[in-house]
Image (tube, rainbow, N blue to C red; front, side, top):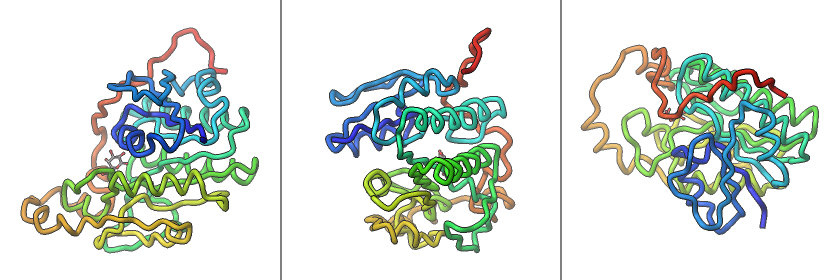
Length: 275
Ligand code: 15L
C-alpha cells in the first residue's frame, strides 16, 4: 500500500479526504494544529512547514504528497507569505531532496477568480488571482511547473472549487466539489501513470460550472454529483450581495481585504535560522 502524506490535515478538505481515503492508503497526516481525531490507521506528525527542517522530516519516505497546508482563504500578507509561499516552497523542495516524485497541489478557484461569471475557462487560461491568497496559489502552480520541467517531478494541480456535500449559496452552485468527487480526483492524481504537470478543476459535474474541465476528463475523472439538485432551494434563499463581487467567479474574495481564517498564524521562531 502506498504511503501518502497529507499536509494541512486538520482543515475541512483534509478531514473529508482522510475519511474518503481511509483503508486505500497508509496516511501520514500533518498539521501545525492538533487533529480533533486521529484514526487508528493514520500517523500524525506535527509540523510547521514554514521551517525547512520540518518539511524535510515529514516528507521522508512517502510515495506522494497532498499538500493542503497553509491559509485556505484570504489573510494578512505575513501569514500568506509564511504558510503559503515559503511553506509551499519548503514542501516541494523537501520532496525533491527526499526523492518523492509526486505532489498533488490543491490550488483554488481563486487563482482565476477575476474571470467573469459569464466566461467559461479551461486549464490553459492565464491566471487572474482575486486575492493575496489567490496569488499564493498561482505561485504554487508556477513552482509545480518548475519542479516538473527542471526535476522531472509529477505535479498534479487541482483548482478546487468548494468542498462540501451540498452547495451553500448561488456562487457555490458553480463550484461544488463533493467529498466523493474529491476522493476520485485525488486518487487519479496519485495513481495516473501519465502525469508530469497537469492543471485540472476540482469541481463536481455542475450544470452551472464556469469551467471546461476536459483536462480532468481526459485523465479519467467521472464526477458523480451535480449541484443542480439543490439549485431551486438555494436560489429561493439567495439575497443580493456586493455588485462587484457578483460579477466575478471569485465572489467576495475580489473585494475583501482580510477574510478571517480559523487557522492560527505560523509562529515566528525567534532566533532560529531557516535552513
Ligand atoms: C477556497 O479556495 C477556500 O479554500 C475555501 O475555503 C472556499 O472559500 C472556496 O475557495 C470558495 O471559493 O468557496
